[in-house]
Image 1 (cartoon, rainbow, N blue to C red):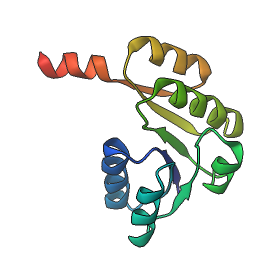
Image 2: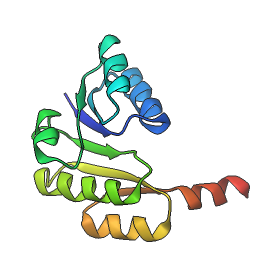
Image 3: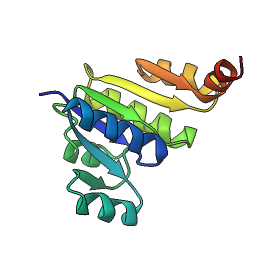
Image 4: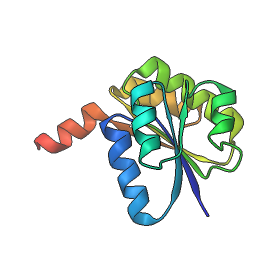
Length: 128
């Protein structure tokens, strides 16, 4: 079975989790907000409390057998650190990252991201 790690559980992570449930895929969420962690655990979801850039936290989330890591947090510095850590621990996993700016997407690619979703580009597409 394929396993996905979702780093960050704001609106983007929640929509992604719902889609993965629909597809019958297993996933583990990594989240720093304790309240969110408690709420999601009460719903029976696999959630790790901690920073997704921490190799020990990534290991607890299943990075060793993950087929994909999806980085959803909006802070570019944090997201890029997670990308770098995930790539070093999972050389064959697909890494997808959300970025606000094109320049961050370019850096994410250099750090090993396979897929980048750039908010400013998506906004432009939506407005056309």
